[in-house]
Image 1: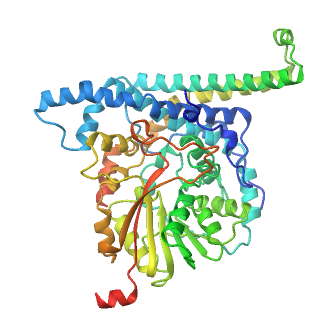
Image 2: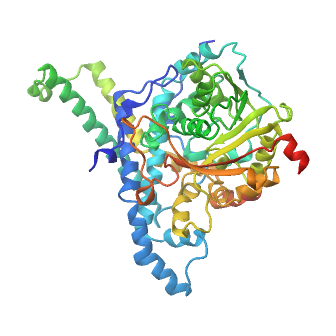
Image 3: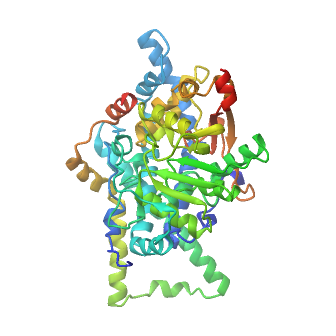
Length: 406
Length: 121
């Protein structure tokens, strides 16, 4: 086995001031799970394609007299295959075990973490919680990625365990591919912006669906003169995220409890940059266009709208790959994942006032310390849905003059 | 502030995530047994890592007397602490059964129904 095939040990995770302290055996559990995940995707994942090609597809053609029409037909056929069943069941168990270990670490020190967060958060004007904000149906229908209590679960007033559990487990789920601070996505965005618009100095940045701010922090650190507004509907995650940023010495992020479908507290054109990182797939068919439309409204002329997600399902993507990428929708409580990746995002952007010739899409990979965190495999050995390689898509908003002339 | 309640980490860590769990096998007992088996496999891996840590540390210090392990007898307090370890282990291994029990009270719709609902709402 090549060195790069073994995920970095959990001891490489960065223990910032809010990070829950894991014990020896809890570290070992995450090491087991990181290697179990890598083995399931990188080695045993190939068996799914073999089952498809050698028996599932031939049986489908024999029965139906045609090939499958969509990824759903592929899934229904594969869900009857014994190899895929076992593989899926193992993967589901690894997700559940990750949650149990993260919660074991966090819940036994929940009171201490709450006190630590309170000390960092008390009186700070940069944390605005609003009890009037309710959890939308698309966040409440199921516990997203099998995370008991989801992002907003609260065991007692002031609890931050939801955020702490999310933070401490990302490293294991992704095999460390997002880096020591799980911020490889945010770092990738910073690199893309610097390469795309050198010298740009945005004044106000809106990060929608920020959870614990792990991707907002590298952006705020890269643009220290900017004010980053990071919003989410989940107070426990925001409470943790604010304390986490403070513990890391990052103070130019304002964490605000808000629902992105209604950004009316901010005026038109208020932000130079509006973005989401792996968030749109956790919304819904009606919420997503509303969020894009509200984001477009609060974006200044010539401003940047950017969204980071896994690659969309296009006609060019084989149905079997679409089926593999759909796994989390049906097996890991990501109920909008499937529909979201099939959406025509360019059309939604266009309807929100971004002409096609102002839109872009780019393939970006996590920016991490490659001496510690090897590049996550893509292609046949890819951990579909978790690979630290994404599609960045969005648009530059037309300048006023161009809009007036149009 | 600062007075926060302690929570029962042992049981809450294994709480069920909201949403109906897919059935991977025709017999639900196979699903359950697999989750038990994977938990046991995981704990064996953890134990082996811990032993590896221990042996490496002891070896580095020249302190290991393997015969003392065979003759060790815990006192009452140490015996209780080891009982708690065993209980934590059992709760971890039987997480799936606990979640089956919690699912009986939940009555959640199929994930397929939620997928369709969120697509159009």
